[in-house]
Length: 321
Image (cartoon, rainbow, N blue to C red; front, side, top):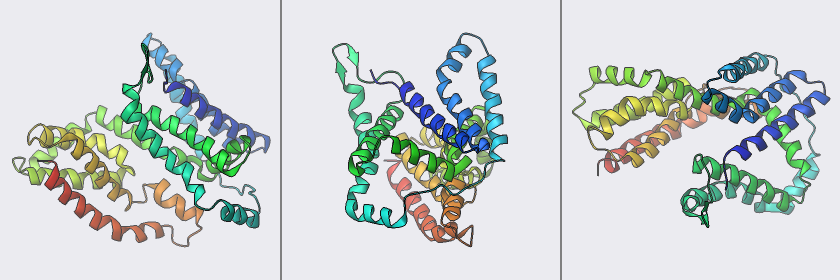
């Protein structure tokens, strides 16, 4: 039975390896940051089990760990990490050609196959998938398959996966956590009732009997909240709880699957336009050493605006069928 927990433990192992390598090089801020994060991922099951049993201490300890991550992030600095010589990397790229893309393409392919067929597979009375989201389990399995395929294509030793994982983590730094943090922030906002507040405000401003007005409020709200919060994952639960579910789905009968998928894509139009999406817009500018820190956003706005218009038109045509 395939469950989500082993993939979290594998992630914790990769983070611990990055912490150990930084500690050996006396980069203690990075070492402590990745070590605390490894402990949080490895101890997730213990925290949930203790909380279910009525013991709040492990969850409080995890909260201290999150605060420690915020403080440690202030001490983290980007440093040059040695790579293979440029000539060697060019020769390897020319030898491998487009085969370099195969492992990356395996990630969405394997994830899709697991989501589509995983819940239907069983060996006797034992199901192929255990508890947990099939999408997350499929993504975890896909990453493992892609890593093995990358080792096969490049003919590198398995230890190279840990070396390159550490190099990428230290290059991204604390920004590597932004997608997780922003998605969590969206869940916190939804649980604290921000969605209901949004619904009240929207009901005061727009004619809720008009499905097009509600649709525009939902689409533009996704873009605005994404620009403020930096990630469509954070905006999605707020806008869906405030406008999508009560007004569009329950009141006007919108198709939830089409609305959700196009709504998320609409939110990413805001991601293209905001410096709050640091991992998408500011980190690449830093990695490419651009003179203009907002250069990525300036290059993307011409795509974001027409894409937003197309998404709104598609939603108007498809969600009310």
